[in-house]
Image (cartoon, rainbow, N blue to C red):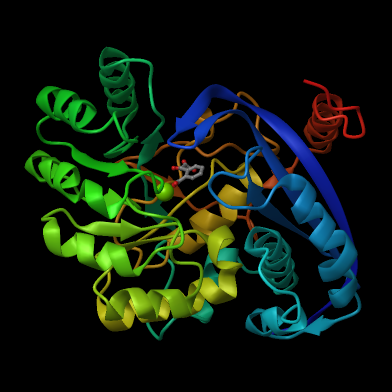
Length: 387
Ligand code: OSB
Ligand code: MG
């Protein structure tokens, strides 16, 4: 493989309105916020990466401001001028900075995109090259859709019906304490045969085990992250009390966390989010552990723009990603995405990896500028704070 040398890095903080607000156990969000990383090589190749974050530091602790700060002040200066002949070595360049996985992941994604483009490969084939032998990209991924907390049970059933009609083959419902058994019952009653799962985003405690066990009757594919965002141990105790398989999201921030979770029986399925674990090199390590342990795996999302979604899709097309991923079509998220072409849902609830090299989508400069302006207009920091 031909090495790249990093010449420059530009950061773009953007705000892109969602088609509809997305509500989870930690709050509702109306817009996507992201820091997009534009990386230029000495050879003139441009790689793009997305730091997936949210306005409210509820899923993870990072915000657009912290990610931009970590990148501008520390991580980008540490890598400018570096030559990379194997993207898996990239994390060592920023090892001396701790944490900040979402920021780190966006930068690493831009490196992977530039590296794949420089070598005239699709990013998905580039990932496959570093996956275990025989794990070629399938060129598409089976996907589902994540449905936020709705104002009523009727509204939930309506949204589910709508998504099923659009062709989604797996439905994930967000739940929280006080919005769980009834919503699962209502949806299951209407749609007895669909692939259905729940995501609690850490809203429960171990004392709620009995309540959570009543969800067993709904034949759920899994329950995602019921307990604390930084717990592994108690998820192991909970799993012994549930028939439904526990899927970890927030709790697994590294390959090391996954090994612990496997050891204590806390993980029956893994939601792997590149942003959460700090980048695609760590994803490849986690992928290998899943293969070795026969652990069911899918790729999670954070309502990314096309830039982040394209990279996630490239990874989700690897063959050991064997459950539907949270990567939906563009029209589930935005009226006009930052990149073109849009992702369109295909047969049997799949998304096809684009043919182009790298992430396979192009950033639209006009939309990028508009989304940057929207961020600045909406969040004019420096204004006096009053009650
Ligand atoms: O917990 O999986 C989650 C979005 C933001 C933050 C956390 C989560 C989510 C999703 C969205 O479920 C899935 C998607 O990107 O379509
Ligand atoms: Mg989740």
